[in-house]
Image (tube, rainbow, N blue to C red; front, side):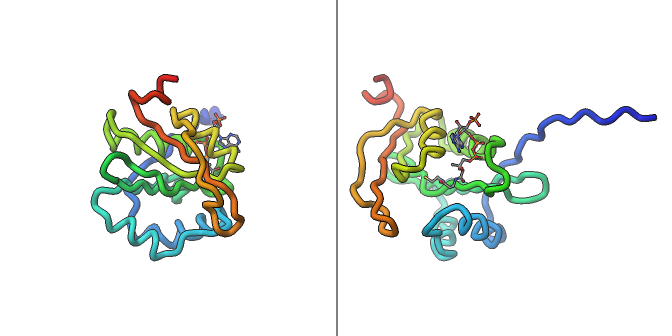
Length: 160
Ligand SMILES: CC(C)(COP(=O)(O)OP(=O)(O)OC[C@H]1O[C@@H](n2cnc3c(N)ncnc32)[C@H](O)[C@@H]1OP(=O)(O)O)[C@@H](O)C(=O)NCCC(=O)NCCS
């Protein structure tokens, strides 16, 4: 009789997000957000050569994605979502690790997040993002405020 193969967690494979991924991305997006991005918004971000757009492949399927745009002073993390059936398995971490690696060690990042989104805020804080203020009623669907977060190396809020 053969011994049962040992089960070891499989690392998620990260690769560049492609236009062909967008049907699957939209399916996750619609389950992840009350006001999901449209196809056109994803196409626009994918068309920018300076952006970092990543797919996490879990098994044979796309399990999550990340969209990060490059601006003058900083990268802007615009969207990150993981398939609800695949959460808490390190997919978001794998995406953020790859984003930071591709942007380079001295890159600064900013983002907005709903003040009620404790899961995302905990995740971002664990990556050194710090809250620097709020945008009042930023989200038009619910009127909720956005927390503005920065991960900026060498700035006062990084060393505080
Ligand atoms: C936020 C989100 C991307 C996290 O994805 P994920 O793959 O489940 O995250 P990970 O498994 O990599 O978790 C990394 C860490 O984030 C934090 N975290 C993630 N989900 C959490 C939750 N529900 N509650 C508290 N902390 C959470 C934890 O610190 C976690 O580490 P741990 O599992 O070792 O405790 C996912 O919940 C999601 O897609 N949410 C809907 C979309 C969204 O809100 N995106 C952010 C918009 S700004």
